[in-house]
Structures are given as structure tokens and as C-alpha cells.
Length: 245
Length: 329
Image (tube, rainbow over all chains, first blue to last red; front, side, top):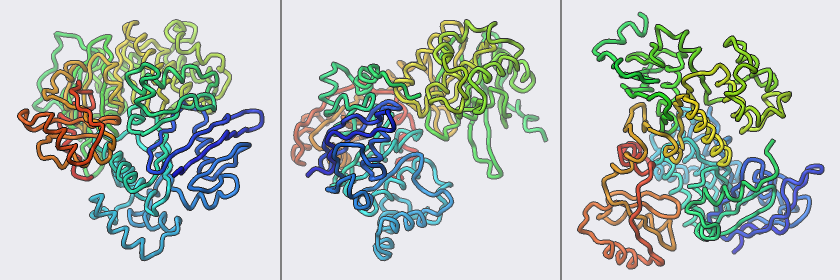
């Protein structure tokens, strides 16, 4: 089943083409990496897939809903997490869960039951009453991800979700992502860490608004005769004409 | 009581026979009423003209160490010297000899590129013209935008301006606090190229980063976690000291593979590393053939197992950082 489809999607701002005819499909349960240098058009594309911005032309669908016509349905079918905005620092752990789950339309009863389950699974039971601002960064990230998939969305969008945490905590985060895919949730992720790109089933690399490469990390490395995704990325990103300024 | 009154208690005198660019001896710093330990008895030396990396995650203590060395805060215990000068007694002299690029963009957003640079030059009694040769490679890239306000620059350009400002007074030692955090991979690579050029001009670089893969771009590194140094050496030596055979294990269902590997009691450690899981065994008597047949029994396909060289990240987790937070998953 295709969870995300893009067919010649274009987004223009005035005479600037931020996203230039991108086409791809993402399967259910896949971890799809959406890579590109700053200014390549990733955020603009992601906003369209989240139902926050309408394409200038082209067709796209997320969770079976047309991104131009059914943005509200899309918003109910997805989860979203980014490093920049995820949880409210001045709310307690359980309050954040209740707030976001409520926004996503989860019933009160279900919230109560699933909150207990979640805190137990994350080993967070003792932190139920803790203000989010008092949690270590790595815990915040794990909690933010868990909250973003609390309502069991078809697809979760992760916009540069990690950064700065220690290697062990970062891995625990990826293990949560793995768990989500085993439950059938599709993961669409942008990251600046090229080593994280290696966790993805497939990755696309955007340069100047276009998708210049799309394949599994293994095939891309073979195709570009590179030992790492970092090398692949540099070979492609170097071609960029557009500067982020 | 002055916080440094007792700072030399039980601390051996620093070795002055060899001249280090930076010398840190038993440095400790706590914050707040609860005395949260940010830096715990840290000692290291940086040689002249070296690129020395402080490698560790957020909250490891990197910024605190750099701020003490930049004479911006005082340590609770221990001593430190920069270019042979004590960070407490000679702080004024130190300030004219070091460049400091803080983690957060700290230039004046409402001033233009050129005005910012001019300000820094003036504060240090110099001019852009006088030291232009030092910053030429870096500054020339943003010079076409010198009339633009600093707040309107892209991340990569802000970084170049900040570095230019840190260099304009011809410092001998440069402190760079997470210069590449949040910067895209292309700009990161460019930035390390710039540091290499500065090293060739004889400038010592003390740089902090949470990116483990940047460790190999340093001459020597200190791995730091929760305020303590885990190891100081060249990246190569640290890798060579890994001391166990590290196996990369791949299969057609990586999430499930990780779970099944962890269930195998012959396995000592198992971490996801993107396209492969990195595994060490408890006992060499357990053969890779046995491991493979175990995985086949669990229903895995396309199984590949081969020995690989450890990365700095493997080493970081191996030398202690792996055990500290592993319980919360």
C-alpha cells in the first residue's frame, strides 16, 4: 500500500520555484529519508505533505487523501515531530500526552489507558509529574516521538528529530522508530546526520528543489561508488546552484 | 569566600617545562544551589598548533570547559592556563590572545556584516585591513554581502562571519564551541577545511562537537560524558584500543534483527548503526556460523555478518557511556 504519493509536485513562491516537479511513492511501514542541504526545498515539500501548504501544481496524496483537497483529513492521519517544536516545556509529562492526544482526537478513556502503557514501556513512570523542561534532551526526544504516534497515525513526519544527544540515547530513539514500523506506521524523516540516513529503507536527496537521487542507501552507495551516504550526499549537493541565502 | 580561594588544594603544580597551548588541571565546576556537577576533575593538555576535539553529547560539560578557558566563568576547583597564562590571574592578557566562537550566534543581528567585523577589530585595537590576510579565505566568501545585516544571513554565512570576528585580532588559540551544530553536511565539511587552514597558520584549535564522525578530523580528541573525560588520545589510537572483534550484522528486516540479536545470550553488546547492527560476542568460542543459523531459525533472510573496524562512536559507547543510560529504553 502506498502511504505517500507525489506526482510532479511543484511549489512556487512568486518567481522562485522552491519545489520543482518531485515524484515518488512511499510504502506502508517504510522508513523514508528525505535529505537535502539547507535551502534545497525539504521543508516546503514536507509542509505540503502535512496539509499545511497547497502545491502550485501536481498531485499528491498522504494516507489516501489528496493534499490539495483534503488537508484536514491528512492532519488527522499523520503525526509530526521536530527538534525545534515538539512538547510544551511548562507542562508535565502526562499533561503533554493528554494535550496532544486530545488534539489528535483520542478519547479520554483511551488516553488514560495508553498513557500508563506508554510510560511503563519507556520506563518513564517516575517522571509522570515532571515538567518537560526538566527532562534530559534525549528523554524529551523519546517522549516527543511517542506522543507523535500516540494516536496510531498512518504516517509520522520527523523533521530533524535528533541532534546533540549521546550515541546510546540516539540509538534508543531509532529503536522506537523501528518499533513503530513493526506496527505498520510509515516514517518520513529529514536529517542532517548522514549516518542516520543509513537507517532508512530508502532515501531521496533533494538539490535545488528537485529530487536528484532516490534509492536504498545500499544502491546509492553502489551507484555513486561511495563508502558512505555522506559521500553520496556530497557528490550530489555539490552540484547545487541555489544558495540557501 | 572567593570560589577559587582553595583551588590549588591538593593539586599538583602544572608542568611548565613543556609549553602547552592549553593546560587544564583537575578542573571542576558545579552549577546552582543543588551543586549539579557540570565538569568533574577534568585534566588535559593541548599542544601548540593542534586541532583538539572535545567530543561528547549535550550536557557533557564541553561548553563549561570552553567558557572557563575563555575566562568567562570561574572554575570551582582546579587550574587552567592558556598560552602559558593563568585563566584567573592573567585573564585580561588571555582575552587578547584567544578567539572565541560561542555555540549560539552571538554577533549583533542588527548590524551589518562589515559593522560586526569592524567592531571586533576595534575592540582589539586593530583594523580589518591590518589582519585581512588572516581572514581572507573565509571572509571573502561573505564579503559580497558585507552590507547585509547579520540577522539576515543563512546559517553557513553566520558561521563564517562569527569565525572571521573570532580571528580578526590574530589570536594564537581559537575556542570553537559546537561550530557545526545544526549546520548542513556540506557547510560542515567546508568548516573543517577552514580549521585545517588555520592550523597551518599555526593557530591552535580547541573545538567541541557532538558529532562523533568529526572526531577523526582532529589531531587528538577527548571523549567527554556527564562531566568526565573518558579518554584522551589520537582518534586512531582510540579506535585501535577497542580490543574486541566488532561484527556488522545485516539482514532483510533490520528492526526485527535487532530484537532477535538482543535475545541471544551469547551477545555482549548490540547497537543499531544504520545499515548494520554492530555486535560484540561474550565468548569467541561462539562461532559466526552458529550466530547465522540462530538468525535463520528466527526467520531472517539475506543475513550478512562480517568483521569491521570500530568507529569513534563504538568506542564512545564501549568506554563507559554505553552503560550509563542504557536502562531507560
